[in-house]
Length: 556
Image 1 (cartoon, rainbow, N blue to C red):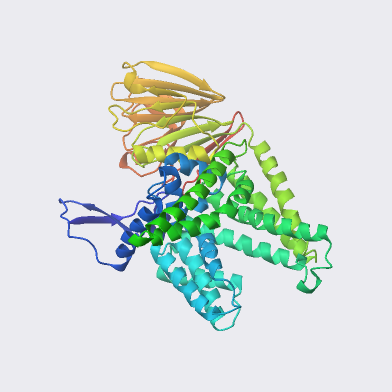
Image 2: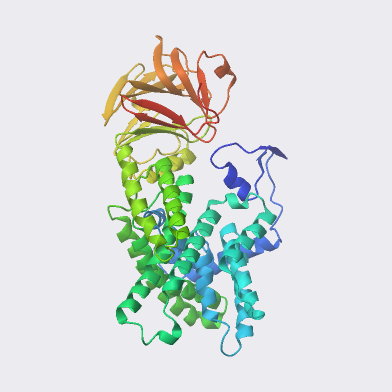
């Protein structure tokens, strides 16, 4: 029997809705296996797993995992180091089957010219449908797949497909099967990147030499056009996906253009070789061909891994961009480009955006200099607190592996590879805390023992108590308490903010409670309560101001 309840209104709320999950359930009795599902989706999922096995069978784990992910969408073989390198380099989209992969595969069938062009269009449609089903009809693949189907269906009827119309129709059709599908961040990134590539093509169209004048075009002009055609789509895709990354709290890479230019030439052949290896693996007498294609794809995957590792090690691999300021800069840059376009500077309107974005980001980072950001992450009953200033971090940790993963993702988005300190408030923990330069566990403290540590402007005091523990963060006189358990100090402790869990702290005099979930004891407290179900951010400019963000309402 299942006990169903509404989804928790946390940072995963809309992601769950996008996946078609509207309720969460708990099995109150011991479940009994009912056998293997015979539905089409599960059949394709089993086929995808077998297909990935064929792709990676003859390769080492890192190369096999990358090739299987690119050819089939199965990411189960990817190691954490490989995923981190691709994410830091800004080419993690290569590990997810998307419109790029569909375009590369469909490009094999060519245009609607030459012999058997109708047959080739039908074959392209069949391949698109196969890849969509192979990846479970994910929103990002659906968007690209619908666009490709419109293109090749148009070829059958001698009609050309408008890219923007195809993208809009794809978004509408995806929304019909689930109104929250557009909330999927993978779909948003795919849609934004495709829009950037389309607009890059529209920008390049006036610069393209006419076919009749190819021989008369100077070599310098021809090389400039080729260089722009190579660079602009990557730059536009990076600019258009940047707002989605910032709004989604994802890490931003400063080397994404370089890494894409190095990786994309090899990505197409990797996908083709991987798919050929997967198909040949089902036919015993084609084992030699499967080995050959797998080896060729593995060599290219090794090259891609090298590109990802090299670019991830560059100084600007992770940019800790301030979200609100950067979004304002991007909006202002888009407005400037639009004005230039309307004033008639259509050929050079796009030149306005890159310098404005660069100058704006530098200005924003200068304004954020010295700001301390305190993030409340993890579960509502036992949230973690991460404090970051000038690339250094202090983590007050509790909870399990899910909390640790959120902490790691947040630190990556702030450009912090390892925090300076992790203060572990757990006793008898069964999982490990996030990796750090220094780790301090209250389990090793004696009762009433205290320790103080300092990082930048953050002075941290940790106290082990009889029935819990207490951490007080002091940022230039602004005090933030993180109690665990009853946290009874015996004497009142006065602070400005307190990040609370399910237990009511004793003898804690606080002006504002920061809570991810409402509990009855909060109404008995004579203080403000700041509810932030999806996590709060406290921005402190030492000696100037403290601002809370992320909650449902502003403090009075």
